[in-house]
Amino acid sequence: MAINKTYGVKFPFTESVNGNYLTLTKSAEQEIRTDLLHLILTRKGSRYYLPDFGTRIYEFIFEPMDGPTFDAIKADIQTSVDKYIPNLQINNVSITPYTDEDKISVEELNTEDQSSEYEMFDIFRTAGEGVNEYTAKVKIDYSIKDTTFESRDFIIINI
Image 1 (cartoon, helix red, strand yellow):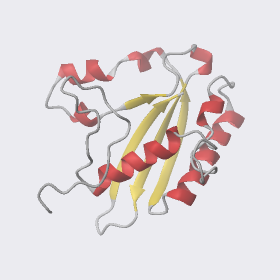
Image 2 (cartoon, helix red, strand yellow):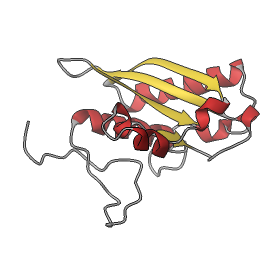
Image 3 (cartoon, helix red, strand yellow):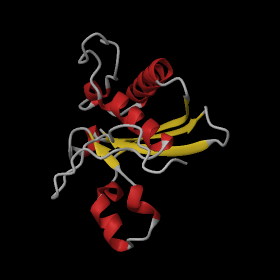
Image 4 (tube, one colour):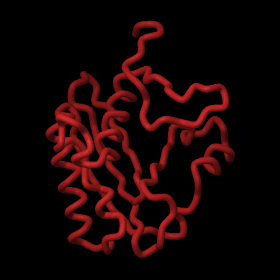
């Protein structure tokens, strides 16, 4: 592994007291995770010369959280990933309605145990805290296909 090798800009951008808003990814796994988040959180039609890039996840924010909506979200994510990130395999997309247990914040997780596995745990919210019946948790389990050793990870997005 090369020393000081970086792959790209980490997404989403983070707040920083020191002015380090643009951090760089240090591994191929971090770069693929960043690419996946960038793809999912980009509105379809918002990129010049790539009108098909992104997903329609923002269109589902105030839709009823039921089976047809969940199926449409899964299909949209799978189609976009297959087209724009071919070395990523989606293992499972699970969508569950919002529950009161989901209110725990990342800051609470990080303050409980600084050496815990939650240091890299991120929950991305597309619309902030919403009304319970219109809020769902999308968990995407994925694996990277191009490496010798399979690398698996997941992301959680609240919509």
